[in-house]
Length: 296
Image (tube, rainbow, N blue to C red; front, side, top):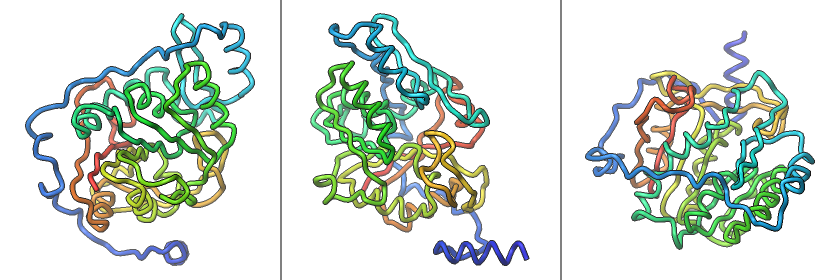
């Protein structure tokens, strides 16, 4: 009875259940130079710069207007703010987590852009309060970030005003409204960081991401720890700012299923970014999260 109900739900969402073996990795999906040497390490720009016209008291007052913050922030002069979340059951946000993820993700991304983001047009999907947008902007990119929650775009614009960063723009936009038409064309780099597993249809998410990218996609997602090509459906409610925006089913893919989806969409090249250090968040080390660099 439970199995039949699950099959009906999957068909309603556009899926069929089949038992398949995990795909054999193919070197055609890998960039050869990554198998030869590690990319040059790149440090995050941290603490963030700060305009002198804002006092500590003014910045504290503006940050205190918001009960929840997904990222921890630190500004020049020693002023810092912790992440704050409503749901204690979620993974605790270590102040170093975002910086560890930067050191994991950005070297390969920047190497793929001939060593620099200067002059590149970058899209930060589901940007939250803008951590990744600001790092890319400080590295010289022209950045557009969007999120469906207006309060998160307010937070991003608050940090933008404190830092004085000019080459980052933020908009309120639902992921399913994203298109070259709504965003003014395609982007050299698209950041799909932490959104795939908050949506119900991973193939459509990757297909829509592909449609907005001119050259490169950086994908970072929770994964189902399984060797098989599986997608787990689970229920999520908007209990916190890092949960799905609406109540409903979300899909968590395994690594093998992501490889199949990328193959199905006929991307030119892709590779999973390897874990090169133990100085990483636990979910990466225990196989519950993974990252890919994808070429269109």
